[in-house]
Length: 207
Image (tube, rainbow, N blue to C red; front, side, top):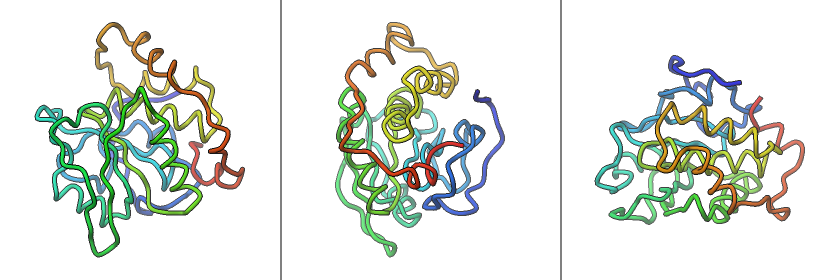
């Protein structure tokens, strides 16, 4: 379904455009045009609503997004960013810019409800997109992205796990990859209160 090692995809319409959903190619790109310096695997999940990423070389200090990276996201229209699982030395809070503000929060891939609620809020309020990132941009951010595709786009769990598996770019998993992602999905279920309309789904979900 997905192809790896693809060339850069441009963000000609910006990160806020709800343009009918990303293509398979865009969802697998290694470097998206306009991403903050120092980030890696910056990719769309839901057009204009949810993006994922990590850090070039990994965030080994677990400090998270730098102030210039936060400013870059804020100026690009992002309203929220989540650091999944690893931000033990991270400064969270609000970054203001001429285009608005960015709220930076922690997240857990084993407790996805808060992220799903904020993604839903971005969809229905037509607010700026959400970024979910982890240390490398592979496992934890991918798991939350896969869950969002089930929650908002009606993907099956099997399809979402296939997406997660292909998007991890061959990175190993402690205890085995099937067991790792199965364990995350064991703590996730679709929340009917976060349903979106067919029109909203058509505007943001993958083609």
